[in-house]
Image 1 (spheres, one colour):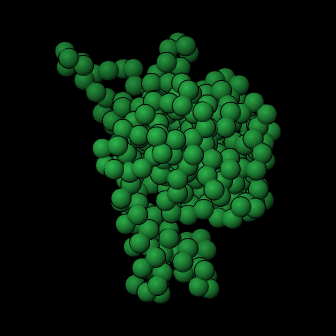
Image 2: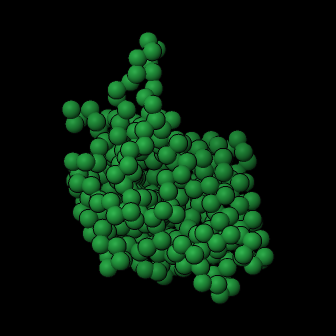
Image 3: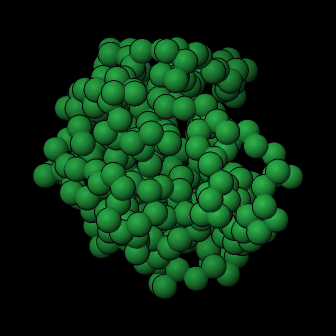
Length: 297
């Protein structure tokens, strides 16, 4: 477990605050880091502990999680226990944080693992096909009333209005996606919060766990990287795992590089909305974690 700690903020008297909540981040692989979501969590006053199972670090017990949890994405599937036995421990941890009402955000693979842990199901691959780049999610009525998600939606919609990004009266939002698998059945107690064309179960919540199929931590540059390699794979190149991540763009077909550039341009067009969503997500998670910390004292 690696501690990543920003100096604690000072109050009006110059004294350092001791109330910074501690969030544990599970990073399944090196190529899917916390990214700018970490910067936004820091800005809201959180301290982060990053657990990297790809480096052999163990999934923590509930007692070691702290005040909140973030589950990130990864290229492996939620069913890939043979190659990644830590997935069983992660499912156990998900069940415990939901039981104990620990504030949790599960992203992409994290959402798929959470669905499996809580009695739902993940399809590998999704029968609706892969989803890559920028897509619109459609918010359910429950999302606009959800105590955790509603303020996040409001912030994103305000950014959309300022920048001229259409939201169909606040019912749709652009998000960054990159997945071939998908949640096929919700856990029994889950509330559906958003859908998309290729992911009918796109966002949902159980207790204090919010699951998102999209990547609020990602950036236009990262989308360019993903999409160039996706296009190259479609052209027949073997770019699985580290080979795809580390290959230089100069070694990719020109058509694949152009596909990446186009994806980046689309992401940059809506990035103010995506950033607003991510910043408010960080703020709401830290607020929830701080409140949870009080109950643990």
